[in-house]
Amino acid sequence: MMFSRRMLIAGGLCAGTVGLMLPVVRSRAENRTSADEWAGKLVAAARSQIGVTLVYDPSYSKIAFPGGDVPRHKGVCTDVIVRAYRDGLNLDLQALVNADMRKTFSAYPKNWDLKTTDSNIDHRRVPNLQTFFKRRNAEKPVSAEGLSYLAGDVVTQMLPGNKPHIAIVGDVLSDDGSRPLLIHNIGWGARMEDILFAFSVTGHYRYSGQTS
Image (cartoon, rainbow, N blue to C red; front, side, top):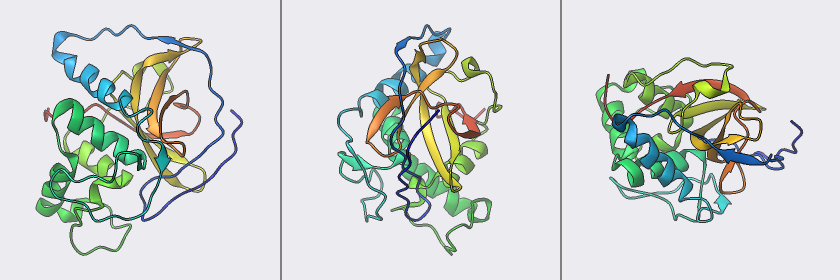
């Protein structure tokens, strides 16, 4: 896939890229049970950000705690995830990540040379969300089979320049039916795009709020 690249990165949040070409898409039929209604709520909450979050802005901001957020018209890839979990499942990743980091700070990455938690930014960093999902036993295999990624799953990727990225798997398939589109913010605000295998997949998670 050909694309031009614009990197917007601050403090290890996530990276921005523009210029992706999108295919015609079609709806995806899910084989979900009633116990998986959470996935539909999560996807709906992620999709509701499209047309609302219009700007990619990785700048550090002081926000409230718990329930803190930057203005909805802007944000980064992690904000799509945090907002979807809050709006769709009433789960506050800001508070959950903060509590887990306070409990076991040594389990989290030391990429930023921090000595303690920072509720303004910890949950907005891709490696921290990856660690949190793993510690909640939400990790699933990374697969080259597109249909193994179900709507509501969370996927992490590595963009050029070793920039981490995160997205929610949507409920729409690519035109050839081989893979779902991702809901994310990679530089244009929140969008649903066909980029599952455009970059290296580094993580696959399925987190409903329950610890298995």
